[in-house]
Every structure is written in C-alpha cells, then in structure tokens.
Length: 134
Image (cartoon, rainbow, N blue to C red; front, side):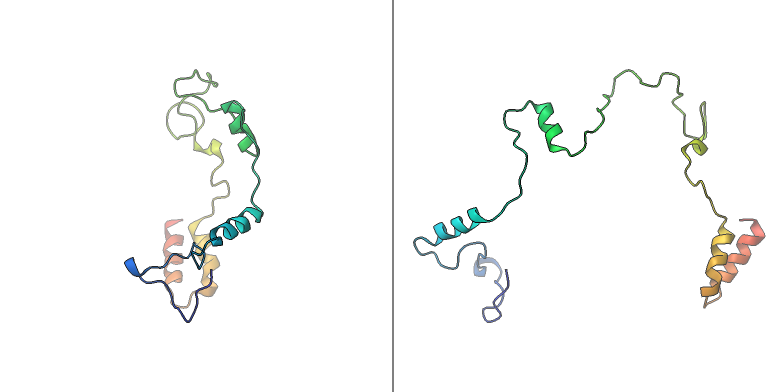
C-alpha cells in the first residue's frame, strides 16, 4: 500500500493507524471490502479432505520422497562397514565420495591471480606456496 505523502507515515504506539482496514468504518464498507477480497484470484491447493494422513502428505509433495528410515530399523547395507567414506577404519576412504576430484594446487590458483596483483601480496604468497610445494 502506498503511503500518502500528505498524511505521512503512521506514528508509534497509540498514534499508529491501521492500514489493513478500510479507510472509513461506515456501515457497508467492510462488506464491500470482503466482496473485493472474495473476488480476487487465490492459489489453488489440492483438496485433501477425507484422505488418510499418508496420502495427504503424498498429495502435498510434488515429487514422492523415499521412505524415512527409522532410527532402530535394521540396516539396508549389511556388508558395508560403518566407517565407509572416512579416512579411518574398514571400508573405502573419503576418496570414494569423489569430493575435490579436481583438486588444484594452491600455487596454480595464486598464479591465476598474479596478473591482477597490484600490491605484490599475491606474488609473495605465490612464491611461498611454490617453495613449500603447495
């Protein structure tokens, strides 16, 4: 709702003015506003009344989600070690997760920044990274 520049904005506390009500409280004004609101287009949701709870959730979701595994449910991967995906214990390490598949050396990243180095700080960092083999 646009503010009226002549009236200004609403004041604090007891000086505040409601902007969600019709301008006048004359008889019939609220009815006219209710009719305007009723005639406005609104978002449509699927009618889920009378459906079992599980079907209500399925109707509300655009794509069905896999079922949630309960905390004490039996495992669905009995042959996979608990430590799979970490770099200790049995099972494949973190390399199996394929994170940082294309890891780039720090010196290579700094070399790309050298043309834009105006203070010489990147050059110093680049030389330090090269000397350490990073």
